Image (cartoon, rainbow, N blue to C red; front, side, top):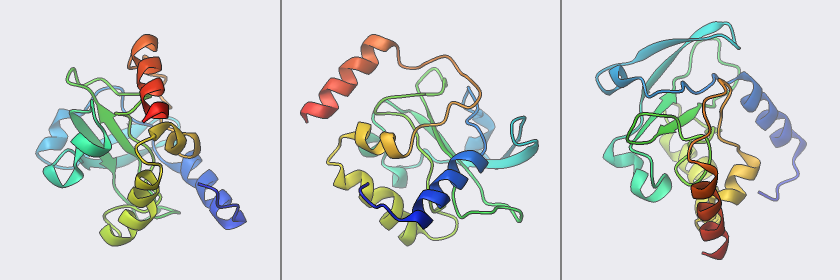
Amino acid sequence: LNCKSDFLKKYLHKVLTELPSCPCHYPSEAVYSTVHIFDEKQGKTYRWRDASGPKERLDIYKPTAKFCVRSMLSLDSTTLAAQHCCYNEQMRLITRGKGAGAPNLISTEFSPELHYKVDVLPWILCKGDWSKFHAVRPPNNGMQCTENPTEDVYMNELEEAREY
């Protein structure tokens, strides 16, 4: 979080601008197989897969999320990153707060070990204060989905995170 590396800044900018936008609703077919979703901003189709299984530990890393999806790498990917999007029980995108997904700098497809070191450990080092993590890796709402959770719930989550 305090790293001032030019390489990291450029990489993060590339990740934030080149990854697909999160769908506003959980693509329920992802439970069974890879889903193909066209991204209008990027002008191409991306493959997504479910990221809600027990190994994901949503109860710890994304409390309030019931479902998540992660974009998959493609042959024309210019980074090793993946978009991570999480959804509530109504299958609506969580756009902010403790249950929101955030871009992964290293896809689990490429290396689960490196993903853990680069994406999970920084979250752990923030000691549960997801607001610090999201300041550097903001949750995606490129499709302008309705803000979720509501302002009052979000403010309570923010206060809880900072007092943790």
